[in-house]
Length: 279
Image 1 (cartoon, rainbow, N blue to C red):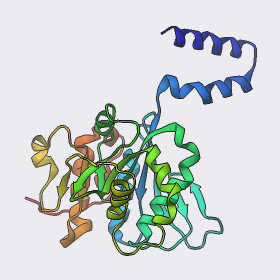
Image 2: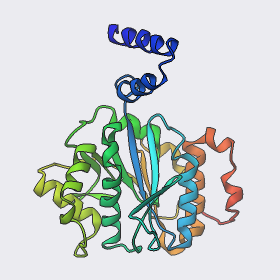
Image 3: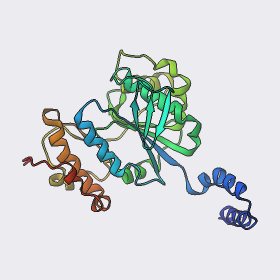
Image 4: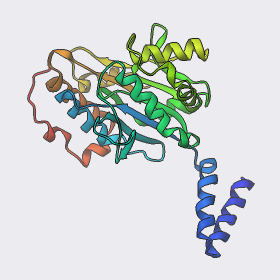
């Protein structure tokens, strides 16, 4: 407590003396110690399918509603870029063509490289895909007692964490960038398996399993809301038979259940007026 009192009076003194540049430097160096670090959310994104428009709109409703705890960006390719990276609002554009393999993997590693110089601002990097729905306050609670280094977690699939949403501490983000050549151009496996094998066999990191909730069947979240465990923060919303229609209703329900205050300010259902019987 004495540390915080001393820092408060030191900042007050700088302001009174008009030392604006020193105030700025003070904020840069000491604010993480006082207010804590944020978590970086990097969402694999593209415009290849119409249903992706739905999920991007859903993410935009809540992804930056908790700016003190999370900083979120879509990761998307643009082959016409003159530079390797271009940050525009909530989207980090990367030079390249969209693909599953090696696109998702290379997009992830390149984004890690872009944010590496801000590594000290974050505790964890969360990398979901578009069809994931995240309850950010629950995710914050989940992470609060997790190791700040050597952490790799999410929904465990065999020996690796599902690419629908994995979490790593920033030291592992740096390790992946340092070993960038291990990942680039790989088409032999999906991104999540390659990342998992690197962390397990090269870095000797054991994955931390945490359950998720998958909407792979035709059901409405509002009818089963009380059955969803309190520790669940990750939902996978993917219903292949009729993706856009059914997933619109599922996402709308999830938004109203878990982000009611935000939804009071914005009627999501009017943006996607669909009438589908999901009984």
